[in-house]
Amino acid sequence: MKRNFGRYAIFTALIALAIAGAVPAGSTFAETRTETQTNKVEPPVLKAMEAELDRSASVFAKSDPPGYFISYAVTDDQVVEVSGSNGALLSSGENRNRWLDVQIRAGSPALDDTHRAGDRPAGGPNPVTPLPLSDDVPVIRRAIWEATDREYRSAAEALIKIQTSNEVQSQTAEGRAPDFSHEPPHTYYGSVAAIHVDRRPWEERLRRYTAAFSADPAVLNSIGTFTAAAINNYQINSEGTKLEFGQVRYRLELTIQGKATDGMDIERYANFDWVDPSRQPSDAVVTTAIQKMISEVNALQTAPLVDPYAGPVLLTGRAAAVFFHEVFGHRVEGFRQKDINEGQTFTAKIGQSILPEFISIKDDPTAQRLGANVLLGYYPYDDEGVAAQDTTLVDHGVLKTFLMGRSPLVNVPESNGHGRRELGYLPVARQGNLIVTSDRTVSNAKLREMLVDSIKQQGKPFGLLIDDIEGGFTFTGRGQPQAFQVTPLVVYKVFPDGRPDQIVRGVDIVGTPLVSLTKIVATGDTPDIFNGFCGAESGSIPVSAVAPAVLISEMEVQKKQTSTDRPPILPPPAHDPEARNQ
Image (cartoon, rainbow, N blue to C red; front, side, top):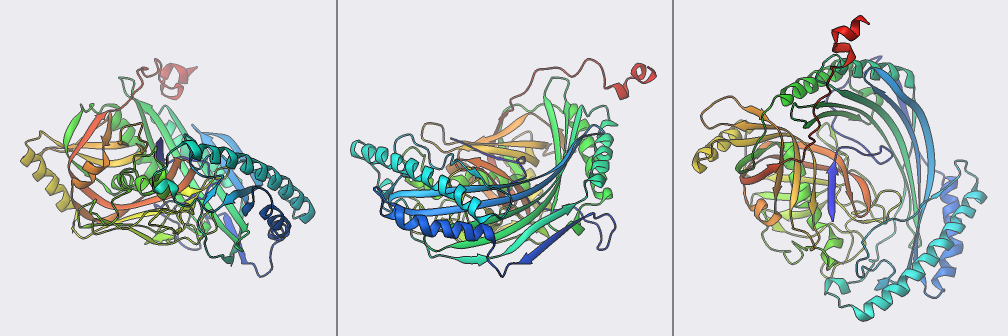
């Protein structure tokens, strides 16, 4: 199974990245505002959910097979989006939706319809039901009633197949662990999130921003998108949990595309995310990013290709963060430890050293920020109604536990609040804010000196410095190599003789986890953040990874897959003298 960790996703999920700059307080540049209020009265949609749950729980608990657990989740999202390309407006609109997600577990906590059997994947699709936007309790209750009946029938049918499968298939010790954990109920009424956005100023800005890209002939295409989202979540289950909380997110994304003479596609990307409308990025900050993106596209167009290489590599913080997400993070997601089809790299290694002793790692979805930077993987409660928890995974190189949803392991029987999913999927244990810390830190300047020393000691003609990264993926199933791949965007050759660094292109970082993690020799002293979206069994979810720069004594890079289509025969019309005169 391939797990993707990238920058792009639909904004109706929770989105937040570190803001690169902001307008001063009181600036007239801000045209959006946010309203929040603390609820002291139960909202109508939660009343409808509770009324129908009270009616259904007792009935399905007595059915054959019993529906022993029922959960209702409603996601109410309001999204504003404005998009421009090459100096023109593409789209501008506002939309609101309300979706119901019903989960019923048939059987018992020891064995239920979610049990992993044969080739049946963990997580997977879970159909959602549209709800009316009006707070009409009888109408909402009817929709819940229909979905509950449908989901129970599906769960009961699945349980029969699982019971039959268990009679003819062997189970590992972890596979025989219970299917569901009991967790204490929570009641929490947070704030209602709402946005009020004037789209017209953003329409003008996106025309202007994308027109600036088109002024350079190296840019073949440009797209800019502003998105604002207010997402309100309501959860209730038969154990007594009752939750309401909302979040507001704003994002500006800029993407440009170019092409090298050999046909390789070149792409640069920048984004600005904020939660307070008064802190949206200024024109000056965005213009600086635009100029940097254009400069990098021009440099990459003529940059030489790198042949396959193995040697010392310095990963900057953002690149290092993705490295840990892919190489380590997916392999400590709890549900993978009980699946016989998974590689189970770390299943039997609790209490053992798996990293250098100066490295510690935790996953803390309760953290909203790191310094002034927003963390995308923040959430107060997971998608199984469990409070998010700051969880130490590795302490000075030693593995302590796994990321857990409500699918228990033999030695880790309880959730630590990491059961997550995209709307329309079943939740499984996933990463939130993966944070790497180190006891062996040096300045980034010193770390670069150590890279040069390592190049000389190994007799290599150069080393690599990975300065920016797009994302990556990893294989965790037994049917594939236990390998990972990380996709750099900006890479430099670093020479041992003091020559200036040379920007290069066409490489992907590859490797295997148990070897690669032991090759870390030192880290920088400044953490950096990579926020993105991770796609796996329970869909695409927002995550953050935080790490300092990392020096790795040996890492392999391979040639990147590329297009062979040559650049356009004619230049863009704006850069063709004959076209301008017509």
